[in-house]
Length: 204
Figure (tube, rainbow, N blue to C red):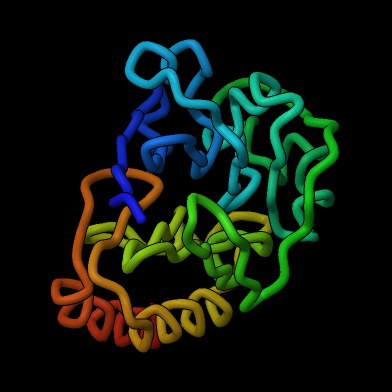
């Protein structure tokens, strides 16, 4: 089994999408990057796109991936067609989406890249939040960043659910953390930081 490589793409909204590849094919975490940008660095076919949540900045290029398997939280359908819920209005635009995707289940394991990607629901920032774990790499979307946590003041947010999601991440077995914005982190770093955020959420 060949080692996986991870390439980060950051778009104009400072959102990170991640191309994960073996020597034959790739998958993409979030669709904030155009397929043209990906082709500049990798000729490998993209066989699946995994959405961490359906906010505009994370799926702005989703229509580039027609014909590719797209995986997302079942409740993403409630966000796709609502410009306020998908947060496009936060970026001074009104955008809705209409596409078919494969709904994932909490705890589900999906065979990809001669490995398995594990699904962990992580509501809080938005009710369709999902983290994905593959080969000790955790992709946390906007639930957890290197030195911050996701906003919980949006119409689809819930502070109590965010607290539970952070507690779940605190107990997870992973090595590297790849968030939806900003720099990467590690489990070791987050073991020190997440308890501080949990205390913060009790107060604020």
